[in-house]
Image 1 (cartoon, rainbow, N blue to C red):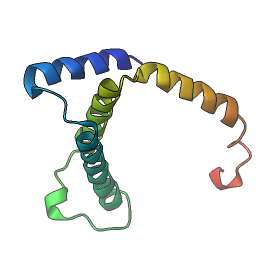
Image 2: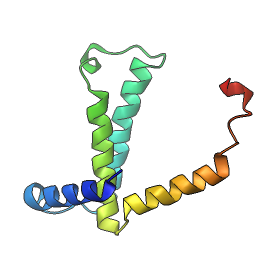
Image 3: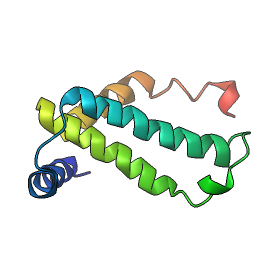
Image 4: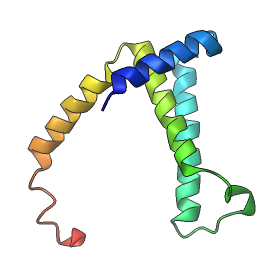
Length: 108
């Protein structure tokens, strides 16, 4: 996974098209809004709520990409190497959870 390249692409886009990053609090609000849009699609398309006609054309992939974009913005502006952080977390979860779910009868 090449998150470094994605972070760089977002940074270049911001500099070329976005003037500057929104501040961290604004981006956190943006992230919350984007996650809400994903939740709305999931709840209506895959959950028990009925899907409104106006929501049927919404693209889940596009909304998920909006979430990723804002996360990359937040990583850039706070100095987080998201690729390194991701692999550190994956290794931690692997060590902690390798056998954890295999015995879970709820998952069988």
